[in-house]
Image (cartoon, rainbow, N blue to C red; front, side, top):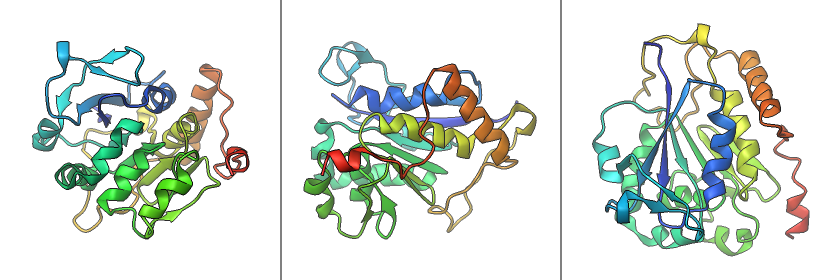
Length: 244
């Protein structure tokens, strides 16, 4: 069977729902290439098996706990981390950050939206790397991680395998950028898993048989299909001015 691009998305109580569902609306439609599984960061069964999103009663059913994700030997391609104010206390949880860091090392791509980049920064992997974050909190939270090269004027930032998007809906534009860098056309897929070579866990790696022209064409096709005006230039960021 031709390989899939498996995405593991971390979810937690009162995560920002558009941080997750916006990008996935760009990534999932129209293709059987991408698959999505939700990982419950809390490691505890939620009431009725549900994990709630942002204070609005929307419930989701995670596929696995964080411990199960760590024990799962099946390869995955992307680790996705949404934001939400409720995740701020995770930044002081060294044990949790160490576990998330293990998944980061196994991923070919790590994609964050909004304050999700703070979790990534807290693991230390963004030191010396470019990244962005939610602009409403930018000046307050980014100084806590001075070794990260924070970029305020950016819809998203790609630095090696790390793709960080700014506030909420910027994740949708970044989602299409993600597709443009990861999509494989059906004729280019094979059944061999992608393996991250030892010592290369921090490097960006395009999928085997990746064709940039096909991937960008497909990303634009999906943007038209979902009626989204994709901002393809991450530096075209009017919100950097209005939030100053």
